[in-house]
Image (cartoon, rainbow, N blue to C red):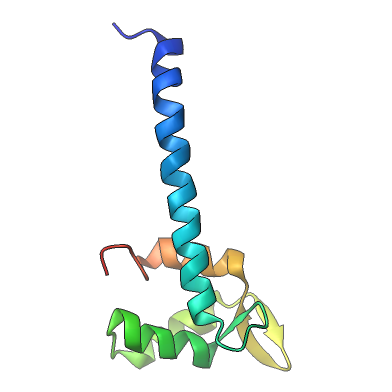
Length: 99
């Protein structure tokens, strides 16, 4: 039997460390995508990073994914906010640490 309080005391610091590392990794991946520094990721930026980091060549699938998941419109063009970018990366295992 495990004491709940003791478990939480030992578990929470490790969990917080993992969460902090994951947040930093996703933020760095977003900054790499945001080539023009405007705080959003447009389709061209996303495709370029996918091509060079993920080595994915199925552009039709990536275009469909981007069009489906984009949550912002900037100058008539669909874009990803940081929050949506993080969700897309997690949901589709893009920019994973292993890659």
